[in-house]
Length: 483
Ligand code: FAD
Image (cartoon, rainbow, N blue to C red; front, side, top):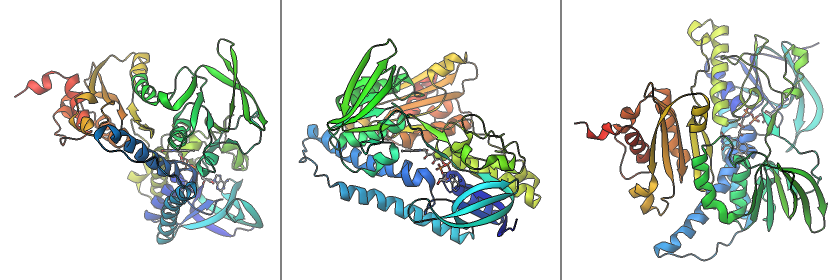
């Protein structure tokens, strides 16, 4: 068939992975086409993920902090919450960032095609034009020929099939619309996304319940950190159901009636004004016409890639949520840069660039709850499971001047060092601003630092970040005694 447009690199999907790859490829001198079905770039992260959730979590954190001041001689009145104003704040944040992305694409001469793209051959994608705020099709189609392709089509929320179609049953996207604040809210799935949204709604006045299939909230995080979070957040919850499945639900005039079954077979039920399903995200691999390009997709919808982000089809690369866990924006961005550099290296004959590979040792995770939980590298359980003996450095924030001054000394900082090599292999922080601090621990792991390196690095006093140096000193007692 006829080709409407030809390029060096076609990037399918305009999320953090896709736009980062497109921008890097353009900066390296390639002709780039970026295909996105929605009107703005930024993908899940900017439009319905990381950014809007943090815009709301910031407001929740300020409200909660104001309440903490009651014991410091300052009381405020009850917050007056104007949901329309809050929504406008969140939408304004998204608008600023997506407008910035559009400008950056233009500046780099990246051609942004608005439409739904599917492979129609190994070197061709057909883009069906979309319009309006969603994915309405105009009927116009363009075929784009490419030398290389980067698939960055992301993921979408998993839907439990038995939940009723009802405006009181939402996924994270629905929850971020913040249509109203319910009295009784059920969160299905006790992971980061569910508990972040729960934090927002609870601070705005909702009573929470959460149901989780596994035996703890925030799966993946160090249990010691989660314990602190759970103790402090207990007042938000009427029930925390662990090792429990949601098995049925029914929409009634009084609310959504939900049935649960615990691992021991015990049944229970509850009635809610809002049910948030946050049971995970599924990759979009089955919806891109992969067969036409000979591109294998696994049974769950993931594309498999090597360390250069190359799929089984050598000129097609894939990055971000569609290639697997952890489904995090910063991982997608990093992978996008790798794919773009490998491609530029190959097309422009730069051997060094062509050898680029994804070789990050660790990807940090953060729950932006109150307090925050942040971790990177191995947890204690994982180290044990892998047979790695560790030295532990713990620093409780009850000994941090800054945390006490902030009236937020409930946190702690924990670092793990390999007993054999003395190098840091993991770290976790629970406490306010933990997410802003974990980057230092990630850097230490990437640099192969040991406890002395970290403990002797002069941290500014009084800061929460100081607790990282102090935890390292705790792991290496000798450190402070040396001349
Ligand atoms: P996506 O962001 O999913 O982007 C894919 C894009 O491709 C989308 O814009 C989609 O419309 C488009 N697309 C898909 N198929 C096609 C097609 N066939 N044709 C055209 N366009 C197509 N991560 C963090 O790191 N930190 C956080 O704080 C955080 N918070 C989150 C909060 C929520 C509520 C959610 C849901 C997610 C959060 N995440 C967070 C995860 C983060 O959003 C994702 O990891 C990230 O967006 C993945 O980027 P991506 O580029 O792989 O895909």
